[in-house]
View (cartoon, rainbow, N blue to C red):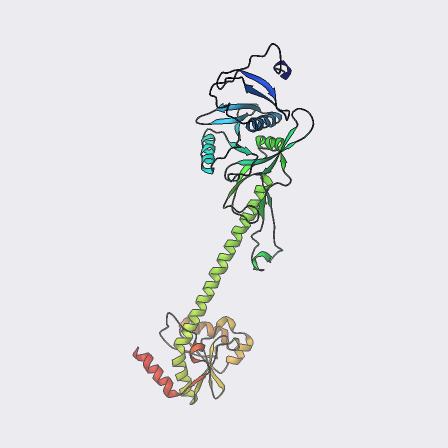
Length: 400
């Protein structure tokens, strides 16, 4: 039926509200939008209490849905829900609710109503023209309404919140600048932001109904979107880009986990080495002091001695306690030749023999290794013990 056949037509067209059965008449708003209003003395009807802004927004949504080639019906009831505007695909296989939500409402209530519709197989998009805390908590958008001169329906609407694009950011290869130049793969430092400038409502509705724009739940990101998660309307390429960053972040976590485990193994190896050196120091000093017939000096473990503890008599090196096999270079091997190496295990003796050669003198002491060692250098560094002092220390160790 043509609008001219019902608007200010004489005789008046017979129109009724399918909600309450009361009479309706065609009207045009000051902004040029066409709608239907109840006649005077209308009974209690859920549509009577609507504001003009709410009615006009529903008409805008219905118009955008029809422009997209779908059917649009107002105030359609479902199983425990009622849609302001229900969009139905031309083949009738798909439906979607569009809710004009201008009044205040809680996030929990919106989530409950959303779940009720989705349980019936009807997804929903909540639409408002105000800043609301539930934008991002449920599939929702915020509009900016702009009046424009022109034909009677020239009221434009732009989506300014609720949409999102993913902005990717990667550090140069082999260097993660945002992690202080830490090695390992870059986890990516992208973020979600709203579409700028806003998106025309008709373009947005057409994209959603066509499936090219979908509601997507994002994880936590920095910058503009700081919630633990947020629902944004976006396109598939942005979801794929986000997924690429999430996979890179997972690879970085795996890398950091392996690096942490390797670091912990390294610290455990150092602690075990220090424990052996601490346990070997008294018998080794006693042996060197007896053979060299002099005072024994215990000095710091340094790379010069493959991180072993060197023993000196009259400023001449006599032995090294538990040097690190991997630290024995050709230069260190030549320096150790002619000295006595002291070890606590057979495995350590064999490894040193392979690294230093068969002519290297290696003495194995069976000692009790402490669980919580202290660095030998912290105990013995720079000290010179006489044979009597070391004999006393060895005696105390034997009594224990």
